[in-house]
Image (spheres, rainbow, N blue to C red):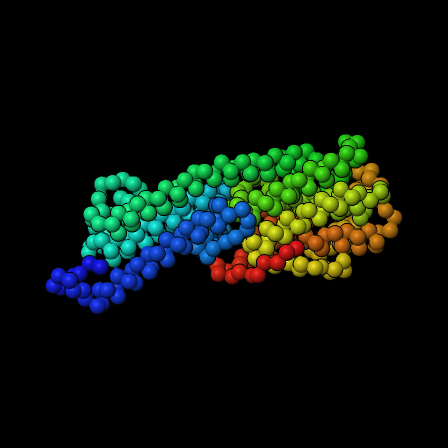
Length: 378
C-alpha cells in the first residue's frame, strides 16, 4: 500500500481500508466484464448477464423514444436498423470503460497516489500505448500486463465474432428472400398455399417444410447463442425473420388441418421444429408463454379470419376439407403452440406488418432490466 503523508513504514488505517475497497471493487469489475464477454460471445448457449442486459435494454429505451417520433414504418425501420450494430459496439465500449476504470482503482491502490496518474497508467496499459510506464515493482508490472491482455482479448473477440454474426445473418436472410416468391410480401401462410396451387407446385411443398426445418434449427442455435442477431433487421423494410417464420408455420398448420390431402409428416415436423425454436428465443427474452397448451386454448386468430382463409384457399383452387369445425379445431391445436411467442417476438423486434403475426403484436411489453425467469426445457 502507498502511504500518504505518514512516516516511512506507517500507513493511515483509513487509507488501508480505502485501498482494500479499491482492490475488491477493481477485481469485481474486471470479473463482471470478462464474464459478460465470455457469456455473450464465447459460450455456445443462451446465457445472459445483468451487464449485457442492462446495456441493451437501456439502449432500446432510447431507440424507442426516437422511433416513436417517426411518422411512417419505413422511418422507424431505418432507426431500428441501427439498434443492433450500435448496441454491439456500445457493449464493447462499456466493457472498455469498466476495465479502464477498474484498473485505475487497482493502480491507485497498489502503485500510485494520484487518481490522474492512475488513469493515465490504466489507459496506456489497456490500449498498449506504452507512453506511461508503471512503477518498477512486481505488482505494477502484473497489473499492466494483465490489463493489456484484457484489452487485447476484448477487442479480438469483437473482431473475430463479427464474421460469425454476419455469416449467420446471411444464412438466415437467403430463405426469407426466397419466401417472397412463394408467399408474397408481406408473407402469408394462406398465400404460400395459394401460390403453390397456382404455380402447380403443390406436390413440392414437402421441400419447403424440409428446408424450413433446417432453417428453424439454425435459428434456434444462432439466435440464443448470439442473441444480438434477433435484432438485426432484413435488408428490406418489409421483410422480417419473425413474420417469415410465422407465415411458414401457418402454411404448414393450414396444410395439415384444412387441405384435403394426406397428412404430411414433414409439415408437422416443420411446425414442431418452428415452435421449439421460437420458444427458446422467447424464453431467452422473457416473453411469457404457456409451455403446455391445450388444443382448446384461445389463440389470436378469430374464427372469422380462419373462415376467410379457407375461402381464399378454395378460390385459389386448393381442395379443402368439408368439415370446417374440425378443421378449425385442428388448426387452433397447431397454432396454440406458437401463437404467443410469435406475437411476442414480433413486438420485441418491431416487425413490419404481416397478417396473423405483427398485425396483432401491440400487446407485447418489454421485460424489465433485471427480470430473469427460470429456464426450462420445452
